[in-house]
Image (cartoon, rainbow, N blue to C red):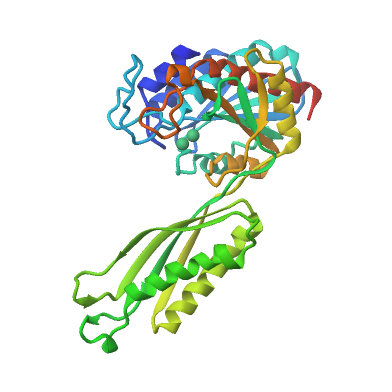
Length: 379
Ligand SMILES: [Zn+2]
Ligand SMILES: [Zn+2]
């Protein structure tokens, strides 16, 4: 498993370009005698393992993409691809799921139903999970539950993190076009200043967070880019704002385009301008099923090296595992991988991220045990 992980680590590929990775995955799955589908959701791979008879179908998912980061670790297995790095632990996720596939295929006569091993492309913002669902990954046979894990250095090796209900936020994005009228800076009365309107729009949008939604409901409305204006002595005729919305609450999320449009419209009209809002629903919130979480916790308790599970706080980050969990009950859990004594404690997406490889066996065994229990005893 460590060799596999290091192999993927040396050959990282960006989202939706995971061709080599997908090839290695598909060959391993075929070698285990699984029915393999490739190019699902562009570069995704699915391996279907059939048990001893009819039963449920459990989906196990790993993400395969790396990040546009130049690795700064000096390890024998450092990335050979310039400016591409497995800095989010997905190399470990692939190695763990391939190992779980190996173990479960050796036990295929011990359980009913199917295990669907899903290796998805483009988790880092590309929505590879959605593409695979559109390509039918939840059908034939129909999936009844889903499990996935993420390595994390926020937890020490030996600790698993679980969160029932809303665990991660949605990731929506928006673009606001603010339109005024160009003119000379010295004659503002003949123009409509799009930059002044933008300043007030940005401020007014924060009233959604502070005054319109309960302080007990987490919400992020973030403007990340602002583009407009050509010279110091010209009144800008248009400005473009781009940003993101994060919340765990699907109802609130669905109401955000209307709420934002009302504010942007009101402010720009009051200042003699016009606007357009383009709101895109991206990753949904990650909502975990508490029974599936319990299944994982019970499995983890039997795994050597696990010192316990902990309830982790919900976060405003997002993950496209959410697309699977929106369709079927499941658990997305965290496997502690930090070892400060070995200097393995950098955060995800850091150019010096690395983790204690002992976490691999914990993750693989936990997910394999949970899968067996789910298929044999139910959940
Ligand atoms: Zn990541
Ligand atoms: Zn990740």
